[in-house]
Image (cartoon, rainbow, N blue to C red; front, top):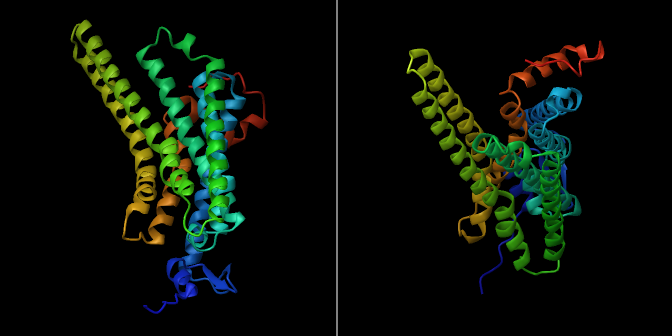
Length: 333
């Protein structure tokens, strides 16, 4: 019988995280944090502030300016609320108790942190999915768009997105509590955390969005060719059509590219982690987790800054003009 190998968890945690150490099995911040730790937290605080401010601008703009009271913008509003909560709730939780520490010390705080993280991130993804559905009807079925995507339908979309996200978050907590009763990792925990959760939270919405945006791009290209063929083939007309195609391609590539770059690595990692004999370094998992959260910071830039009326609204808000008069009925360029 081989002798048991004792692992010094203090050394392990010190190796995987520059800010934490163990004191009587409690994870606490180091009394003398390293330069790397200080720079890391400055960066994360800055990330959180940008996320909060960017999404607040979107929320205030849509609520205040009547011109922005449209079904599409209500979906963007729901997305901004989810991303704002990520910046307010998930970011501080993640900074206060890192993912690496939670992997070594499971507490109720860690379960709440994980539940909020997964729930709000899932809500953000589902809202992105709803926006893609809205864009599909707007581009591919413009004549019936107003009847199919009305305020009632948008409210249902938003409620479904938040409802599913809440159920997944509750499921994560239940699975974590159930796991404490098992000597080994419970099957239900593995299924929820590594199979059912990722399918509902990521893979299914991604497949839907990829199919929808591909269809939108193909329809937009076909419409552009149709316009080009029905015109007098003037140089000016051709240039306008070419510009439309380039802009549509750039926008769709940015939307899908940023989303997939932020989310795909993390979900691939947690999906195949239980089936791999080679352990993934915790530093890698934690970095991928923060990469997914950074998508909440980028969403306002992608879905709002692309539109001139949002830029006009932001200028009015940042300049403080909304406190100097009633601009709610202003026409935004």
